[in-house]
Image (cartoon, rainbow, N blue to C red):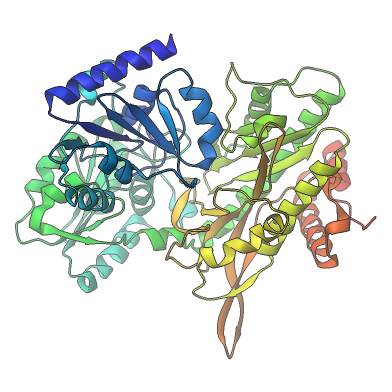
Length: 597
């Protein structure tokens, strides 16, 4: 039935393409805010294709449908697209053309490609338009047929907004707004229009639950010296929040009036917009008012202040305690011979984290992949796929929480029986990379791409690799994936700076066998100052042990063993005062010094 539904939806979409003179259409996984995770209202690509991953773009022509996605979703996409007739295009794999290249080869000169201009960033639009124009292919930016093809489309989110207390945020919204305004003269701008939901939430100290796992509110924000305006669904604003916003110099207008608002701004006003996270339709509506540039919010948001850092430390300790009880329950369930499904693991984790009154939500859908499922990088079990977990093999658990004072993200791979030599060797090679990155000292100005090979070197030397990034930024009670920094093979120009919270998560995935990923969150902090300048390092904040059974000490150096033992001693020091009885003994056992055999 699912495949029949997909075929019917694609046929209706093609009918609308024909009516609008469109030879090919691009349907991205996107919203008007360049979000990674979307509210249900914007899940058009998933509706049309059946693919539910958070990254991927659908291209539809009269006779074909293709879906591009990255290595995190190759296995998942293959399963979800099976029988739909949609062709999987594996991004980053040699021989796979990019979308623009494929369109040039398959759309005739003079024909038209259709996109919804509210779903394409300015930068993405420019790159696509330039390529198509060079081959005499037109690009139509007002091809929005979602209301016609998706009769039961969910409404825009209406969850209420609440204020994120300054005792957690560290600075008031008024202070942050002034910080933004202070940057505008140098950028030759009079005001700024912000589309990114996490930037709006951070800037105004507001949160909501419009997007699963990400505590953001669907809105646009206009900031100027004469006052700021939040464009948001009125149902989301309580009298208390309206009064709070007013006290910070922010008025409220309906979200639906964004286009009218933009066109009504004074003609001579210069409005800064982030070309990466603002859509082309916003640029078109601003017209000559638009000043394209980089975000003035991203860096201040990424470099956490002292209040936020203190909160993150507390959140890590709270999370570590919850994980001790959760992993104990997982072990006990298997030891007693009771059935344990992958879905049960997610429920156990949520139960123990949710016991805290600081808990708000998970920070993403828990990945509990047993055996071969661990090799599916972003696997998330459902009623159909959930496997029974047996007392042998590897279990990969990637999970996190949203606490009022911080966001967590941790991956541990554990052995449920006596590990094989292959499991131990694979795990240790991954951990050697994790340790190498975690203990590195580097000069100020270093970018993530310059560090990425540290985490891959031992895998590469054995003919092994992984295709996902090694580290992503993490928000403060915000999105678990946050820029502008990252640690990955391709170059991201933003250097790592003091106060940035980033993941350290190398992995290894053997299709049909097992998956291994080892992830901590690390804080960039000053290391030293010498005659060669300032140097930085990573401080590991995550507090939970790695599985001692999985280390092959024969391929570890003394320094690597010492790093692990120091880390485990730190975990004991931080968590034992919060534990008692059997839980304290469990942690003590799991953090015994690793010795060379």
